[in-house]
Figure 1 (cartoon, helix red, strand yellow):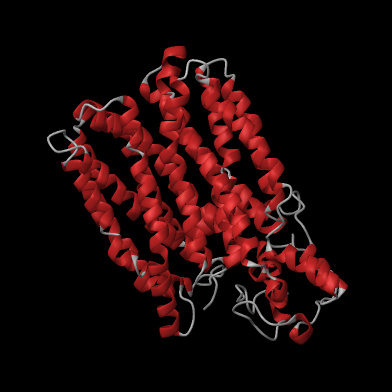
Figure 2: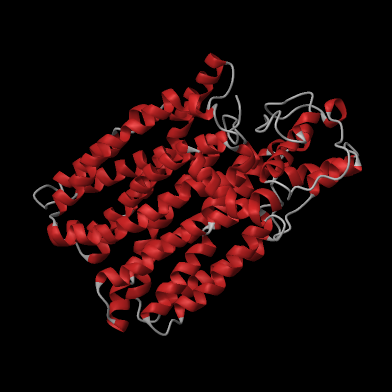
Length: 510
């Protein structure tokens, strides 16, 4: 891993070599001189980043060198966690009629439960991402998912609508670890190698399958007289505690801690260097880093902010789509409520096709590396230069065949194509960010997610207004026309992203 602070930090000045990936031996013995005196990582966020970067000196022990079965097994468990948490965002939609029946409230007010869950998804990573970058991933996962399970007791046994909405926000905050930290874990285990695209694709698949399955699952639970509203949330309690127990037995993946443990046992580093690598987070000492790193990235790295805004628009489309399903398939096309819920599964088909398509994207990425002699984060968008146009095209396709005058299979297929194009673009953005900011990957993903989920939450409410005051055709067509202009962002990053990264103190140098 290349240095992000070369020449600026008290640790990097002792380096005489560099590495762009796993090496064949402990380079600490070859070119690293221990810094004189103890190093306090809490003195400066930049010093903390420099210490994170010290892992390259011992990358023979890097988690990227673990057996493939072990790395993929860890990723599979964490991605299934992501799918589980995202179910709630749409199972809630299926239960909104029960909530109104129980406590009253307008559609906009009841939708606050869903939108504040999404806002919680934005708030949590701002703190849990940096914590996991400096203190380790494992116990952040365990603690946050335990909290998620406990908070779902509050939603299940809410005494009134405001209490339900507040606990939805808190649950969304706790469950957000599945969004920021899973992407960081993938960066730990796969780095920027070719295979990272396939691993990140599994994460994207899980993030999209969860909301797609949520509505049918929620519909089944709410229609079952022996279950009802509270079981929408009690199931989260049971499964959440199960995941918390399982994750206690999953190994730590943060390279700095893994390398320190393994290298220390092997005697590959001296005591002072091992102490630096092992130094874990002290919440009080590192509060400045935790509280500021995500926002530092968000406001000083324009590419991350722009991609976050773009992704917020794209992610919000999913919730607009969810808002319109009842109107399109029940009112316009005469399907039953259950049949309409099953149309969400077109997204599942789309993301499964995406997963099968990733080797094509990986091939283009590998070809770009051979052409330029090194891995370029911008190459992650090579395929997206073409597929990004499917995003506005499928929105217009859905819009102009949604009025019931065309077979309902047309908007169903359009939604499936959108389920391919939208996640593929998200995948490219995630890979780009983790490639560009490997030492603070979870913090960078958090900075990316905050504007994403704030916009998505706003669009959840906007969708209610649009479908109440516009036809289904023009509600979706309006979004489709707007999205043509946003396609230009992907072209801008592909051709000019490298020049922007050169000015960054946080981005990896290539």
